[in-house]
Length: 298
Image (cartoon, rainbow, N blue to C red):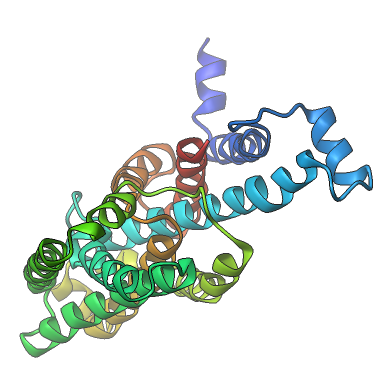
């Protein structure tokens, strides 16, 4: 029993198991849905040569885009949450705390009002709103000193403002309430390859920035004064961290709507599995977040 516990206490083993679970979740995401498929039917549809079959169309145009979108959204939200919890020194931090959700929701509603039949417009609106919200928060924080407490307060203020505007717009046009509910619930039922390609560059840039600054985040977690004493440019590091959060959150929101729980809980669970070193926490959080979102999407 002790050997068994010691074996699973190894970080490499835990990471390997998480990777296996992710692969298993991807397979389930392809097979399960309103129409259940077996592994045999999946391989027949993909390699049988009949591109007009119902199984082939379900796999190519519904299941595979859903799985890819869930992986991107889950990874993005989990990493964004991990970065935010580090730079704000707040275990309850998530993308919603810096106004991302409210900004994405506002512009999603505006796009739905202006282009009611365009899925691309609403996704682009959600992404643009998330970016504008984070930039607004960062601008306020820079003007007032750039401290982590200032970012939290600015995020709450911007979120409240955008939420009030959303309520006003929905009151004026009640038909938009359904769009607001759909965005708030989140999901991947209508995801297309074009949406995925649209957000992929922003997702990739956000992930690269997060990985590159992972060591600096470790230093920053020691406190602003100590980090500055060690030669770190604290404001610049925090700026890149917020930029990464904006890119990742915007990509996730434009694909899936609001799935706030992923960004909040993933870093906590992963930190218990592999520790709080961001060089390991960030990539493993991406894997775990993808798993959570895939299981939600199924």
